[in-house]
Length: 287
Ligand SMILES: O=C(O)CCC(=O)C(=O)O
Image (tube, rainbow, N blue to C red):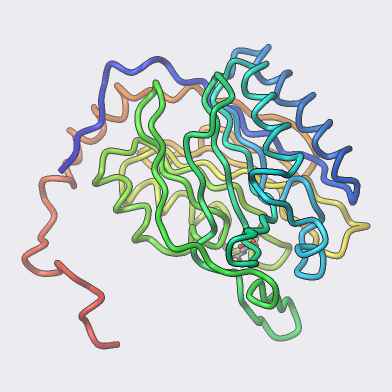
């Protein structure tokens, strides 16, 4: 099993809970202002929310989708990372892939030189129907990604998921076992599932795997079709909430202390205590 380094560069994480509008260029400009602001406060790993350049809704995705090669968002994100001299987990954007003519919910990740070091297409589409509360079917216009994503940084390896991906424990466990010290989820929970599960799922993924977990939401806009829960949150490897916030636009920060993470793992050594002789492959268990 891969080990997580203890000698990595200190990591100051910032989550930007952005107010998203229907104006793509205004969203990119607002993201830039906040990314540079976070960097000027010492953040060297900066995260934007799910769907930060477009309103969140299946009817909006085809209209806002752009190619990663040609579109304005990747160019703008690359320049932000470079000018901030920070790693940037660029939330997500509706991506149009001209090679298969499909639309994906895609997160791009940049190093401090502005180069793309990872691309994650949401692998679990948000298709739910809670009668009388919320029905949302991303699959009406989106296709699912086909791979899990880990990126290499000066701090260590980081796993990326997008929103609904957090409901599935397996990708976080695989990331932790392959040496990632954190899972980062741009996300946009809602007024039904937000209060029920947003924090619980982050704490669950963290405590199961003894890693940092962070989820970054858009700010709530009651004039939009979709009301995001907000409450961007950073959780530590023991499941403790390090920082959280309300539903408004803003930034939260946390220093991610990998030494403490390793000490905690030694005191409760789940990694060496697992019984894969009893549960090696859950996919073979018949429901
Ligand atoms: O899982 C949930 O309750 C919300 C998921 C979601 O909003 C999303 O995947 O965008």
